[in-house]
Image (tube, rainbow, N blue to C red; front, side, top):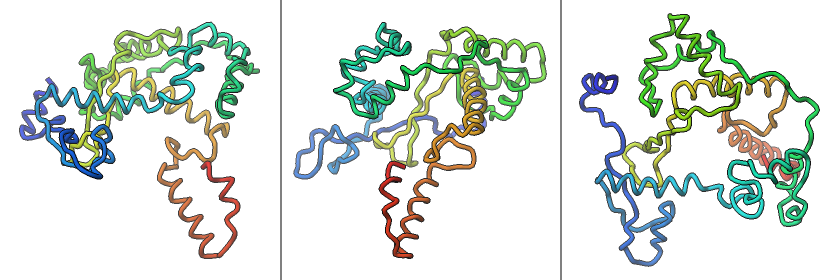
Length: 287
């Protein structure tokens, strides 16, 4: 119903991808690149408008996007095999209890070995309390800020469903409790395990397959539960206790990921203008 109302108010509005451009695999010539790598392709492009073909091509592109970490130690190889995709193998349990896979350590990068040592270390503080609880006040304050036009919920439960109950204490209490239970007892509701990928153009009017952005739509209550517990509570906790590396700029209050680049450019400008030695840059290169 919400979509019908929106279409009535704005009938000429285009929703979704109606065309996608892919490299023409039939093109042959010097220095055109490989059709399997659209980023470096310099040959002709062909446009696809058939919805089924668009979906097929998008799935190919997204498969590459979602598998960018396949070559990392935990993505593939001996370590990934013994840990398992879900981290529930006997070797994974042994690692968390302090037993390192010594037969693999010599073949791993030092950074990976440090991660394994951290996973195997015993923590001195173990909380015996139950999982986090989402209060009625947090539920109200979170959904009150959301625009009702926000797309969410593959199940069809629209954001307006939650905004409509904000003045009903019983319904608010019911929903906040249902949002808390999965985190308290460690379950994953079936409705929360589904996600819808929406494709948007990074550059308006440029529908080339490598210039599309993936927008993942989770269930509305699950998405806001993560916002309350992770984006608010956890981020505030790590900031208050100085647990975030100083080189981390993204996803932090008062900082912007672009600030890291600006800071580096300004640092180089200062070194160049003052004609100083930039030896300190070597230690800061990782940042």
